[in-house]
Image (cartoon, rainbow, N blue to C red):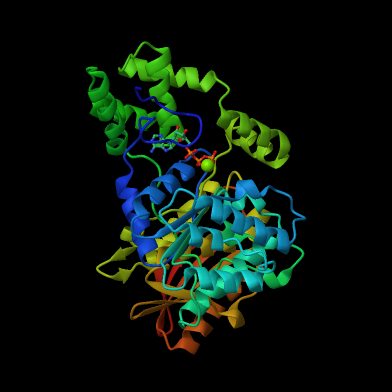
Length: 460
Ligand SMILES: Nc1ncnc2c1ncn2[C@@H]1O[C@H](COP(=O)(O)OP(=O)(O)OP(=O)(O)O)[C@@H](O)[C@H]1O
Ligand SMILES: [Mg+2]
């Protein structure tokens, strides 16, 4: 039977043409070998189930792999602890059916006495003792509203932490896949269960397909069909139109193969994209449903697409800010001032007052995240300004972000930053003043100024 391009459900190597994702899988397996617990959190139709399937195949010689889907548990939020524990063990037992574990071990996974999470925890201990068991859970966010699910996460977390001290046995690695990041779930009715999954390692593998990976599928197809095509050119173009979104990559190929008489040319790709754009696919159908349900999302998309609203954020790269291991505070502030000038015509001043500080802090955080840290000097911070201390390697900075809302404030300029510099025994400081009193764009001036024995880089 010849293979096909698949757009309905997970891909199966023997049946479907598939992008070779070995490089991604290798990185994920490294995490599993390192005993990490983590979440593969991706949008709909992004290859989550396919990835778990491939992982299972690659891991099964070295590990006992339990691969289950929480979709089978249903979304019944009222399901209690007992029923969750029993269903979980039933699923585990079922998943080991075609594995190479003994029948006895498989049967033992279902323990009818383990009807609460404490007992289930002890049971997992027994089942994982002296074994390397990997738990893969698909659709992990399916029972997101179920309190028992959060307690289950808490139990796994407790065992993970205990394992560090060798007090218990548990899963070697746990991988959850889902659309929502379960790391962020908090149950609104139970505040003790905050962040039950905060042990999860960051998952930084880019799961979109790059042009080289797309080409691997086309080459496979080409060698089976003996068709003549420029695989490099075609895969680059498919990438251009799909951004490597797995579903769309396969859909473009399927459309060319099945509906366009195998027209593997640039014109063929454009025709396929047009067909897909006007077709009601699973993804577009789901997006339309969300637009109907969530009015805020609808209004947001409307303002961008129809009214031309621009979403802007301050930007400068870490490489630019960091030259010869020295942090350029001047550049950081200059770029933020440029951003402020850009948005000033489009937003209310109340917006700047309300969100200006937060936008600045998250902008700064991204720039110094891996190399340094900052904190707010609360004794110098008030409703008009925020004063910060930054530590970056051996360098230390103090800076203020000040908002001018009335005339009187001008006379007091630099007072707080100078006091902060005194307190820190620093001779240099930084000041960015956003003048909220003028509606029209005002030229900003940046310069070093001398005040007594201190120097301040000032932008206003
Ligand atoms: N390795 C691959 N090669 C080619 N296409 C792929 C591959 N992996 C996924 N796809 C495409 O993505 C589609 C969805 O795959 P899959 O069901 O694994 O995603 P998912 O993220 O689990 O989806 P859902 O959110 O619906 O659960 C497939 O039908 C196929 O079109
Ligand atoms: Mg899936």
